[in-house]
Image (cartoon, rainbow, N blue to C red; front, top):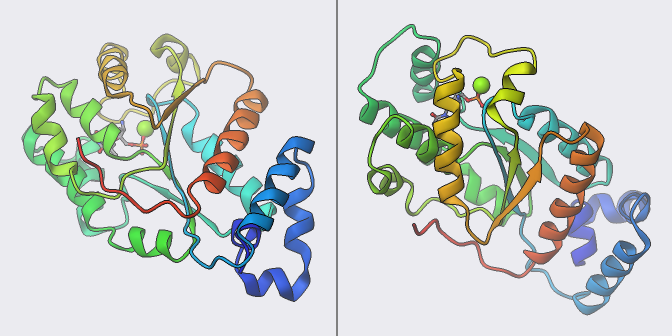
Length: 252
Ligand code: NYM
Ligand code: MG
């Protein structure tokens, strides 16, 4: 299977309909098509591709859900093997406890709920297998949400990071940067815990302190199409660049 084939989906679908190459090449900038060709030639006989772990982070109402959906359908349209995930995953037993807490239907000590959010990531053992099997995951929130939201309550940041150590490390974290005042204007908050402007400001400060070399910041106040375009470019680059790179673990 070629790298290009993996980028566009499984080799079976690639050879079955021959559509993936056209899909992946279409709509891309000329220089990007060049990159695809080069990668394909250099790695034509390799069989070691894996999917990319791409995480979107940001305050509530920063546009993550819409942009994740748009990016997902763009990549699917290109024939990529890709899935959209989100945390918290409210479908699991732990996720239902989190969901009730966020809806103010139950109470937990701050440390307990922090550990439940983390457990909700640890229980998704399928993540590593998906990535190794060649599926790219577009993930709405990850460990950075865990740390930023809990630290904003006053918990020690090192304590907050500890249970995240060892989870699969993202290849790329994209932060949608929107001022809390702007986020509120976007139809207001949904009434869940944490959806208060003062608290969101603190969360934003903690997010800022978490930025490292895997982060790219996009101005989330730009028109949706502009944000979408930047996301596509970053995601495509990441999917290509992580070919052949080992999966790493979060090591805060
Ligand atoms: N949240 C999310 C946390 O406090 N810790 C975490 O680890 C994660 C993943 O849950 N306000 C908070 C951030 C959000 C809330 O997320 C629910 P969403 O994306 O609004 O469903
Ligand atoms: Mg929310």
